[in-house]
Structures are given as structure tokens and as C-alpha cells.
Length: 494
Image 1 (cartoon, one colour):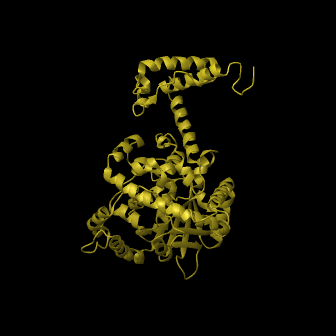
Image 2: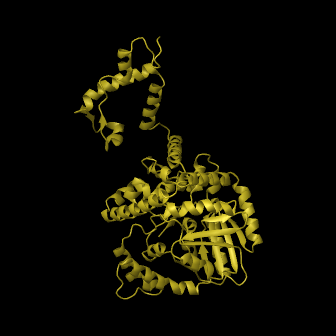
Image 3: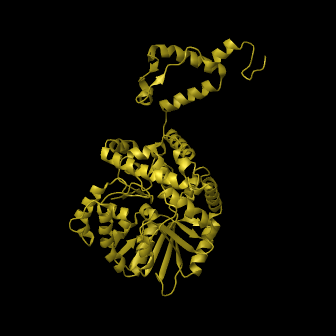
């Protein structure tokens, strides 16, 4: 259900955000599902973060750790490779999605397998691994409940943490009844839409795959440079099954996920569960270090994925997006996401973090509308456990989009002309006063009952959805000069 951009980052074949958002806004069922789900997660998160007196200090510590790690990323990655190799694992370096897919496909074929079980992984979605494996005749089975719903429904994920957040119980019941038999064990007779019944149906459907699989593919929440330990946190136990039962384990991890030391987990294992699912701790936290003879997978491969991250690291403003720990707290508080859902973003990374991450990984020319998919209200910044200033990055990327358009045109746009005129007026007090007098005179012709509605010409698009108040009869400058004759604005006498 996905198509590639040719640059590695997987795109969903949806139109640009403004058009896709209009379609989503007309779907009342979708909006209802999103409002209920994001509201529930948001309330749980606020409750558990409010229990900690040092929550803000934890956020500061997480942000500082991420900044330091990104500043010395090259050193920590080399240290991680040495530690994993020393523990019996094998490290592979992938510059882009194609190389990562070739490496994983080759490893599965070398293991003599034609199917894999998967732990939920954003990195493998980003590179389109399932599609690449399918082209090589290898079946990939998602084992996370929400990912299973998406896969059976031939659907697309719409949330980083809850990929099927746009589905309600009745829709999931229909998908299980209709599709499970084509993928393995069918849904039980008389399956209802009760959560317990749906979870039991998924458990029965997946168990035979856990027991049969020879190869598992996972992502990683963290990897520790000093020990070579890789970690996955999850809520269902499917990850633990995948990480322990198969003979071969392949982990695909973005290079930004490395942490310097084991002790750093103390901070992130408090930040992540509270920010993501609103839990005090994750039900399942699995860590492994290389291979252990006679216990767990006997062949471990770690694929370190770049795919645009090095280029992002070079941007001194945009690099902070690489600190993301994929908790999705920013999605759950975003008024734009709550109304449009994840599909409108056209990327595996939806919501505010997707609006800054996707254009940087793929290039702003591939996603020029995403930096504008925000009200800049700042709720995402307030919720982010590692204090990524998403509004700052959005404004930075918007400037890049505007500059790219300017370079591609022979003549300036009407907006550029207006901005240039505004800059000239604001830079000179006499010009500003003249502009204010002109605006006041013009407003008498356009205003009705103190409001200025739809404007003609190039200002129509801006005024289509908003009214503006009529300028006051007297500006602040004129009022000051009238009421404080002989004084400057600082209060000093001339």
C-alpha cells in the first residue's frame, strides 16, 4: 500500500497535505475515532507525568543527553559497532533505503527462510521493507496488534504509536472476520467487537507464526554504545516472542537511536512510557547484547540506517528533530492532527514530528506542504519529552520552502512583493506612518460594521477564511504624539 519517492523515504500515494486534509475533514467517522483516541491518551499522559515532581528536570536531562549524543554521533556509532561485534553480533551500514533492504533480504535468504515475523518498527516502514521482501518472495508478518490490523486491512498506518487509531472496534471486527483466513488461522466463529475477544483472535492467529518463524526483524528504541546492548519497549509481548524464539534476529535502527551509556536508560525509560501510552513503565522492556550460546537467537545482525539523517544532522536548526524518541506525544496534542489524521501527511511519520522530519529526510522539495501543516500553537513543544522545538523547525523549513520557490521563479510572487513592501515600510517611521494613513483611508471603503471581509486580488486567499478588524481611527503613534507632546516614546523630554 505504499509507494517510494526514489529517495528512500516511503510515501503513501496520497495527494499533498492541503487536498488530503480536506478529504479527511469531511470524514466524520474518522474525526470521531481520532478525537476519542487522542483525548484518552492525552488525559492518561497528563495524569502520569503530573505524578513526578521532577518531570521537567527529566525532560531537560533527556534533551541534554540527545544533544550531546548527536554532537559526537560519529564516535558513539563506531563504539557501538565495536561493542556489538565483540558480543558476537554483526553490524551492517546502510546509506539509504535500497541498501538496507538489500542487506535484510540477503540475510533472510542466507538463513533459508521465506517468511519473517516483525516487531513494530518505524525504521522498516520508512524504508518499505515489507514491500522489498515481498518482491523477493519473502512474506513479512506484522505481530503488533495495531500493525496486524493495518496489514490485514491492506491499510496504512496513521499514527506512530497506534497505527490503527483511525479504526473503531466494529471496523476491526469486520477486518478480522474478512481477512484472517487468507493470512493463516481464521477468526473464531462468532467473533464480537469486544476488546478481549479481538485480542484473543489476534493472539491465536499469531501464535503459529511465532512458533514457526526462523527469522525475526525488529527496530530498536535504543542501542548502548558502551555495551552493544539493543533495546525494544512494547506493551503486548509480541516483541519478546520475536526477539527470543527465531534463530536469526535482524534489527534495523536509525543511527540517531544510539545512546552513550547504559545509565542513560534511567532517563529515557521514564520519559518514553509516560509520554507515549501514559503508563508509568512499559509492560515489556527487552534488551539483548550480541549472542548468548544456547539462549535466544544464535545469529544477530544490526543494520545501522542513515537514509537522510547525516544531511539532517548538518542543519543546525533542523537537527533537533533527530532527538525524537517516537513517543507520539506531539501527535496527541496537535489540533491539526486530531482533525485530519495521519494519512493526510502522506508519510510514515505523521503529525508535528512528521512535518519536520519527513521534509528533512526526503528533502523539502519532496514535501513542501508539510511545514505548513501546523497552527504553530506550540502544544507539541510543550508535550515533547526531549524538548524538540518543533515550531522553530517548522518556521525554519517554511523559510526554506519559500526560498526554494523564489529561486525557481523569474518574477516575484504577489506575496513576495507584499512582504518586500512591508519590510520597506517597517524600516522607516515616515513610510510606516504613511502606510497606516493609507490603510485607514482604504478601510473606510472595505469595512462593514467594523470588520473587513473577503478582499479582492492576491489577498483573496488570505482573507477567504478570516475577517480582520477595521484599523482604529487613530494609531498608537498618533495617540502618543497627541497626548505626550514634547516626549519621546521612552518617556524622555526632547
